[in-house]
Length: 238
Image 1 (cartoon, rainbow, N blue to C red):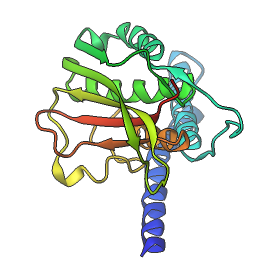
Image 2: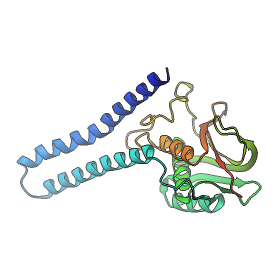
Image 3: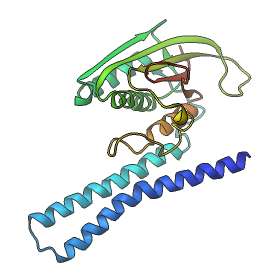
Image 4: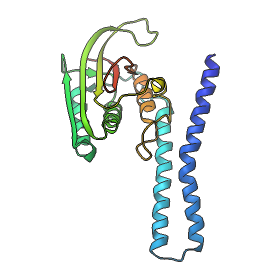
């Protein structure tokens, strides 16, 4: 049953790759055909610019897949740690400059701080940016995102025997939430209910991969009412 599930997920991934890469490739081929009969001028320049954009889109898709699939680049013998408040301040500064967040109220609360977690600064930044962007897009750029973090004790990730001190992060938005029939699929690669051009459906899959590599986890709170809530748990380092 486990092997069957793995094969099914590989099939879904392959279909997603074919679809996401097939569309821009078809566009590039069509533009190449058009260039064969187009004389040099503004139209041909525009065609070349469009081709470059579509090829860059393929490159981003492949890059995201590599992030999702690659093993950890960290030396297991070298401990990494990030200050949660520092990373969150960095992330909110980056996102605050985007028009999407002009009408988004971001409230954050870190209890028992300062808190540090066993994950690199870059990896934690990527996870938080993905979650906050998803929340803002789900609300169409208008609403409230609450970020709450607190220290917890006796956390056992997965089937771990040894309990650890950890930090639990809740990211909650006031958007429409996730339909029950989609709740179990949101971490699957290329699963997305966003409008065309808002993403490839790899963001949450990458977040899950990053959290797992760091010895933590990410989950969707199916019981939360009124918007979406994601829960990230990471090993506490101080």
